[in-house]
Image 1 (cartoon, rainbow, N blue to C red):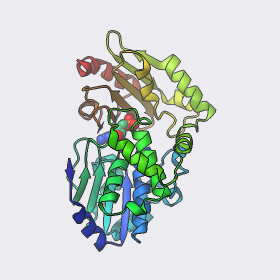
Image 2: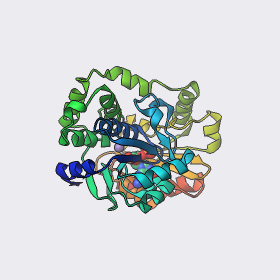
Image 3: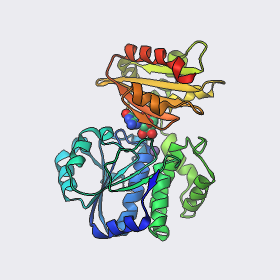
Image 4: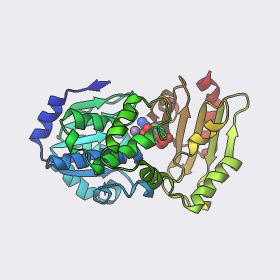
Length: 333
Ligand code: 5GP
Ligand code: MN
């Protein structure tokens, strides 16, 4: 954990006008919530702010306040590179290594602007000038809330900021049920609700948005593709590119799928393998002390949290699954 003092953040922000906020590859609810929450707050400080995402994010996050202003790097490289060159500060939210944002990371590494890291994942790199990093935070949105309060911005937290932060707190905690949830999480939520946001509406906007084909993909994955390793508390689901295509796969359609086997009594590790053109996207989830961050780093070019991590494999889907099976016994011992 490293949290620089609020006066340091204040001093830096006082000096800059142009701010760029970037978040991780395949942005999720916490990535978008923290970025847009901070975006709205910095706007109240009269900064010129842009949120940049490396690639597209799911449609179920596209209702969020400020969404229309987000730039997708893959589609706006030249424009983003100009903004980065002009930026007085670059916030990097919900990730902690430039590798995680691919080409955008290479571009940011070249800039002279101070970088500000706000994140809750394990093992951060050391590229930043200022850190607000805590692996015990349930979400980056929790950290953005703390940062805004620390900067004296409590009064600035309006309905827009609250809605954005609520999304990240909700999605990164599995709707307030993971071990990362504490009384602090609920205290922050209580404060956010005072702005007038309606939790049931936000929950519905994010989760009740399945297409028919996404729902059928979920059914197919669970009934036809879920495998429990014999004698081990481990379940996995592997989906080939043609299976995903058959169910008209859209970005975000397998979000949350990896967790379903936990509903089976005794399961302690779940894995999901999605085949795509560039290789296989892997997702790992665990219970208790089983550390999938270390596992994903060591074997699948990834990382994340102790109980939730992701990565990628450049082998075939079949080889990736075989590799996972061969490592599973050691992982849970
Ligand atoms: P998911 O399985 O939902 O993609 O990701 C689980 C967690 O691991 C998230 O917190 C995510 O940010 C992180 N994560 C996912 N993929 C990668 C990766 O390739 N590298 C690293 N370092 N973290 C990842
Ligand atoms: Mn997060």
